[in-house]
Image (tube, helix red, strand yellow):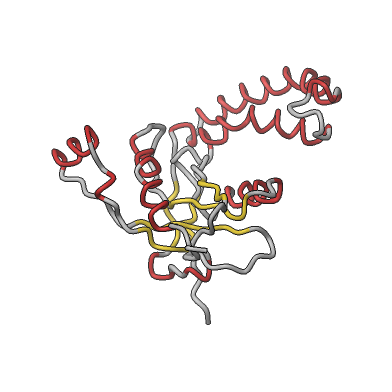
Length: 218
């Protein structure tokens, strides 16, 4: 029996609007707003010149309007489970890799604040996703001239993990961009509410990621 790299946590994020009756009232307002906007969405999606991209289909343009409108209500009303990487199963052959801390990259005001609060760089987990059909390892060195996407996850830092819904997004990027060979994302902590305190997980990791990815000599 093989060990799964990813596991689903039982704990979920629970924003205030996940509880009734506030949730019901809020969703009624959201639905009413969607019905009011629907005729406009239909018109602008039917005309190629007014779509987000002229080459998009009517269905794709409509999906984007709906997604843009429902994005905030989704975060506000759903208690969503999150997929994390199990540290015991990190395996470069399966796309996961450890990123070593780089204290030499911490300087200035950030270093001063870290020293005052007793905060030190930590070893974190990263996930490498390759183009479909490529059989590579996460610890494979970057080739000279190779372009790698560093993905700052769009889960609002309150839900989802590197192997959640963002996997589809990275797949599309790699599919649509011939010059990109793979995408990399750092696992991050989640906040229990909207806020920016956890964005530091991503801001401090590019240096660590670059140092770990490195470059081959050929």
